[in-house]
Image (cartoon, rainbow, N blue to C red; front, side, top):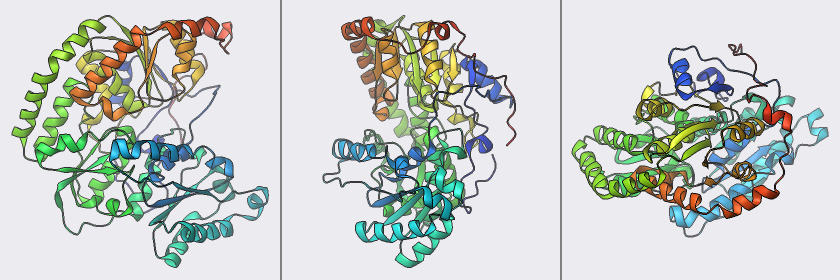
Length: 495
């Protein structure tokens, strides 16, 4: 892997940095083999129904920092969907993170109009930064670019730097306009790139009792898991503070729940500040949970503690897992999620004795920023549990997803993102959506998820009735076509 350049304003996009792709159809084993030999080539689409925008991925990392404010430099429509993070913050603050008095998120838009695209929006942005500072007194202000501000060429970095000198607090430019990258997760990288550049400070003193945890806003399972090792988590970034992020360089290590999310930040903290990253993939499923705890124990020089935890957990939870395996044996499951979490769900399917009949993930990273194959959960999944046929990388193209789902007709759909389960319901296929991905980790999470699957399979009356009355917007012609009809022949991208 090449060295990350955190000195420049824009993050290197995943297509260039990692060789990520958004189009593939085949098997999981085939994808792993192509990735491993360096022969992976993207398949573009002649037709696309929709696309994910990087701006929302950058926003979800920075808007949930407790004492930060966010300005979207673009038309107001670019900020129209970000109100959901206010809901996310309130709903999860106390039950999942123990924050008693959550505050409203501070999200603003410069509201660029047609005249601004002609004369430029620089003055409007500078004025907005001053006003947001006065109104919120935020500890840091993030400025997110949009397609409009990028097209007209506003120099956001210079405006942010000038404002930073004026108000005396960090003003962070984040370049995350939608057309910058075809891989939506580049938005995560852009957000973390800005955090490393402007918020993380050189360590004053290393804290051997602190471990960075790059995560979403799910349940905090790490405080309890870390306790026997005598360490505590620094959860990044949802519900973190600007001051807490500044001290991320002082942690003894970094772990992540998902390399799709944290690949860039974990590698950047190690490269810039010597914070070692635990590169083994996140603890989903029995085999991977054991690996994860052993890697943590090795890094902390407490291998005996790790072995004790593994032994105790197996004694406590394996009997229940075996019961679930008996109940779920032979169940045909299809998985859809972002790349790494899709791999995690496939691990869970394997451990519960189910048959993975296919998967639809939104993109694929053939490598990760740390450059270590231990983070490749798909490769581990194929090695540990076997191949997954009908493996589709579809960049949120619902027409391909519905086509495949209609052909395979699994017994259950396991999904990570809201809205997707509707398509299975229309086809009469029971589906399970679990938003809290961190609750599925470890032995405990395996049991919790397995119980939800059993419950879903035992309560199908609503789905059956819905499918009798639901209409499908796709024509009979398309449903009888091959799902890769609109995928072009594989070719190497020239960027």
